[in-house]
Length: 313
Image (cartoon, rainbow, N blue to C red):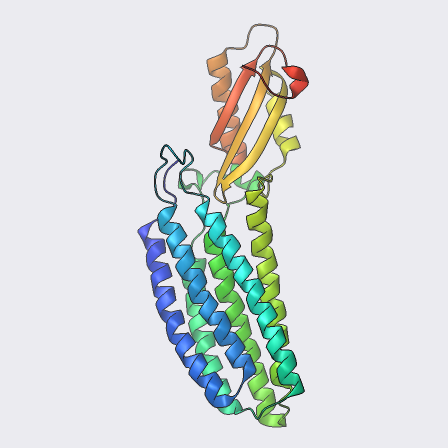
């Protein structure tokens, strides 16, 4: 397997971290001056954005290391671990914001809404810029990016690591919108309880992002079938080849979010007309063109072994 990241993506991360760092400084100062919990909550989210971007960048660099004697598949799954950690941090942030919001609801403080509004607008602009910077990269096999038949059955797979960092930033942009709304309402009505209310809503948005990232990362770690693929459909496609009589021990899983692996035992038709080399090429072509599966382990048999439960030599 080849390294699936490039220096252009790394530069995007570095610039994103720099812009996000400036936003963090502005929101911490603005939150302390204005007394806004919503703004400080957003600042906490921004801090975790920097952590998420840094972790993703580290995983990005490490995942390009080649395979070795101790890691025969390479380091690609570090991408998934980074996404898992990022999802967990989003969960912690949401809970922390809710706890603080409840306390602030019981003991409201005076909010300086104009300062709150100005800082939130600045944060929103930066978050949009960073989101655009990160969102411009989809991870897929460029050698087949024009293969429309493969697109139909298995759409482009997004890099989970990049996607988790992107969700951090998008969630923060939505948070900034919430802070802006709260500042406007407080400015014109003086209802300071709107500040902790918006904070609770921000926590809900962050929690939703956390759930999506954790679900995807855990699904890969337990070697679930990749999103958009069906074992039954692949089975039917393989048995549809004239050389194949039956298929068993069919397994499909993600090595990382952008690399799918497949292993299968294929029973050849007993007519004796099937040529193993030609059949292997047909099978790999089908898997590559129809399902974007490049990493395969195929074993041919004349009869099923152990009733299709594996253990063949």
